[in-house]
Figure: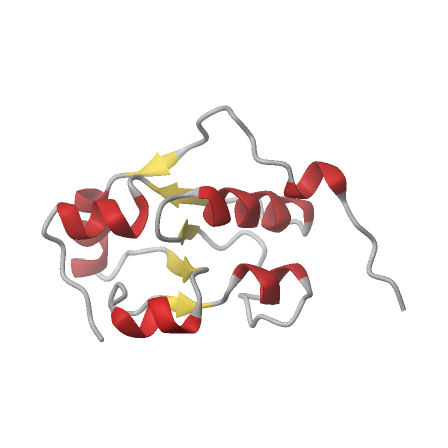
Length: 121
């Protein structure tokens, strides 16, 4: 059985979408008002260090509908990968699936670490 290929979903958007700064995300997490963090990197990347409380859902699992995501499509999501491309693709996939409150982490995980933000292994 073939999986329909949605060309417009997987093309990278060259316009910068909404992003959340690492400092803002950390402050919201400390106040227990943080969004759901969706880390779309590989399992190996995730195990090497991720944001505390991040939900590991690789892009391919989201694309195939295998990832466990919030049932409420209005839930605030912040998507991150290592440098940005996978997160941008995932953001488009999530939008196509009805999630309308999806933001990217500014600088992604590389930027998170450069900013001195905490990671867990």
